[in-house]
Image (cartoon, rainbow over all chains, first blue to last red; front, side):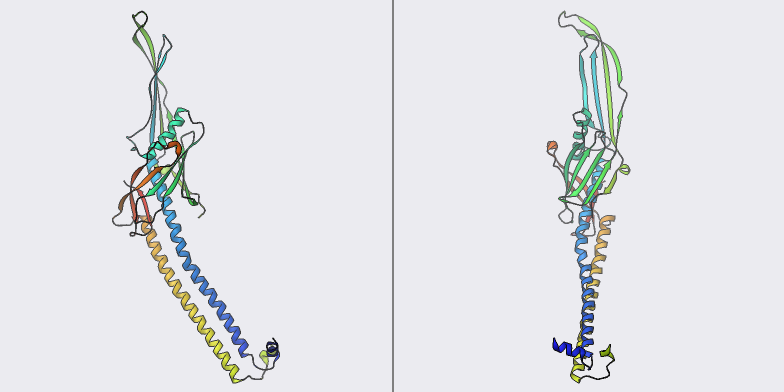
Length: 231
Length: 106
């Protein structure tokens, strides 16, 4: 400490001090330049993981959009009322995918189950179904994507897609739905009915009512995909 | 300031040591900058390759596109009666083991 003080207060040259100062400046600049270079190189490894996850989710979103676009379900209900006895019989009660528009897959089956619950009135709140899309390519870098599909009481769908336990790359797909309830078709027919007591054939007026409901999901250009994750 | 304006000299040893320190500092800085430039060049090459892969995956430029499937597994317990299945897709990527994307097969 004394020698340093002597040196500072001495009347002799300062070459070493200046040289040491130059050394410190060089070391600081070098450290900054190297740190920046390493940080730039380290960014690459994260970019690859990020893009793999992003491509996995966006590919799954496009697949779900392609599967759901233009999907159509037709619900048919027909009943007959014997105007004489008042007895009502259900003739038809079906709810099916219109296979002339889209082919049946496990995804259409899932949507059909959810839509049928709403169509039947057994569900009064939005219904959620979940599924996983797993790429079967062993050579491509793609991850399985989890999808939560929620159907509102108006049949519109919202699909939330994400990598398992990682919401950074989450995407949301919104599918509008259009419900078309046709005017009930009423028809009256005179039908001969055998009275079980008298075994005499009587003519009863039968009132036939047919109701058709068509649920159509939006075309691909009406389905929006938005990024909801943080990354 | 007084020290810097001082007109008195110093020993030859001190001067030599100072020159040595300055030379070593300059050499060290040059080595560090060279290493940083090399690291940056490698990183830039990796970034270029990465974006080429990404473009191939996003624009579907693989030749020819690889046909494949994805498996859909229904996981909600309320719909466990629905069996899963596979969907035909087309995989896009620059090469195997590269970034890839897929879309529903036409």
